[in-house]
Amino acid sequence: MEEDKYKDYSTEYINSNDIETDSKELDRVIKVHSEQGYILHSVIPKVCEGDTQGYILIFDCTNVD
Image (cartoon, rainbow, N blue to C red):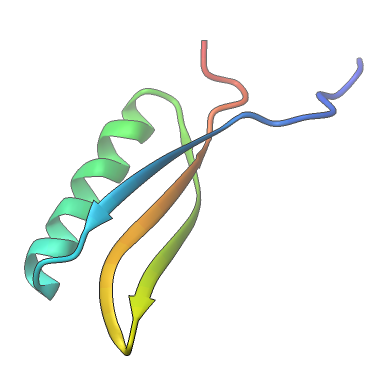
């Protein structure tokens, strides 16, 4: 069986508001994508001058039908 040479990824950007809202929104987006068969690959905070402006979520969608 030959493995895939390339993987497909999907990205989502979430604006930052406050820590409680951010955590709820991150949780919601991760749950929705995982229910569709995506696998969370990375969460990358977007930081500018010491403040978090948002988050980039990268999902592996290689095996999603």
